[in-house]
Amino acid sequence: MCKYAEQTWGVWDSAQMQQGFRASFNPEVHRLIFVGGKPVGILCCEHHAVHIQLEGLFLLPEFQNQGIGSQVLRSVLADAASCAKPVHLRVLAVNTSAQRLYARHGFSVSAVTAERVFMDTCA
Image (cartoon, rainbow, N blue to C red; front, side, top):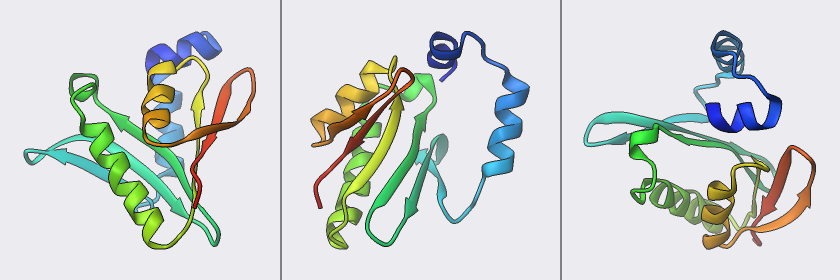
């Protein structure tokens, strides 16, 4: 996320990012992503009454572009389909590769700001 944060806000403050993550970490919504028994990323999904909010899907750089994100995303979408809920997410506007990933999996843009693109699926 470092390059996207720098492109968006001009700076990446590791200490501040770690502090913010620790403050917001909730084991009920954050899940480690493992490949071959090795942790390679984090998934954060919040289940709400009428939708699922995909708060984050982060993979270490060396595990990106290998289909892992798609596999995790398919799992989130299957979970949402089983309870007939749409999935909502937001992604940094400069992160066009993530936007393409989400679009390939049926997400469409619902709103755009200078910093973020908001995307949704249908229930």
